[in-house]
Image (tube, rainbow, N blue to C red; front, side, top):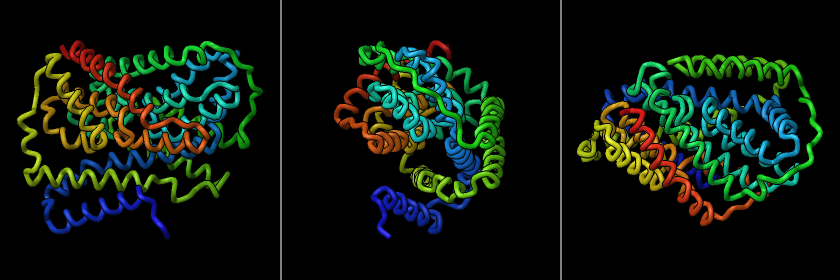
Length: 387
């Protein structure tokens, strides 16, 4: 069996990480502490991915997209507002990868079906998947890592994240709306809506989501309600549509990549390789200090990917405000290089398969136009909130 380049890279990283653990290069005590920290985080990622995939198979997102097209009443700008809201809600509660992988094809096909250019809708999903992912601990893997140090409940996190998140939504949407105003202020013919093929699955999955979403904002251990939701949907599909239940529902490659990066960066920290970062540690709440840490996070994320960027720079964030500044950089900033966020690569694969083409050069240029003001204004918003 021939492995893809991405799979081969992930396997290589897993092997190197395993060597670090079994040779003692990562001390046993540090490995144990790391395992205790990341197990619930990765457990949540697995559970929420299964929930999102099964909800998609139950036609929840397809039916919702059809309803959005009807509610738009032939006005593209109204449909645009609904799609933006869908992307934001999906990212905030179900994580950025859900928006990139599941919402993207839904809105792209929706735009194509009504004869509207899918480009602004596709760009909205990938940009908002990143920039709206600052809102709650469950929105991004980096947030889950930082959340325990920021506060004991999602409310403490939200108290610092709400203003930068608002900026992260408004600036990309404003730029897209202006750049694609000819498309977005047009009209379309309202399509006929269709119902789900299995109403039991549809309403069962919808009910699980309706209950789960508020729990994710109220619960400290978010892996628990997510796991319960995943088990409920697995049980429902086992009765109604067993063939959908497959091993590939678990995002093995993403989990392997994340776990390997955790081990490698922790090994570097344990052996003093990254000790120089302590000199960058900041507990100041001034606009300059917050902006500097956010900018460093954004530059590092676009250089090596946002997850290792967070892990590498975490020691430089001395308190909850500094951690939020770092999250602004690694969540809102990775819009430029294709590898800055795994969500971007997943998104690109989806849109290409749907016949939507965008050159990486153009993507990076527009990403730069959006990322710079978004990170700067979000950092200033955090300074105002924290001050």
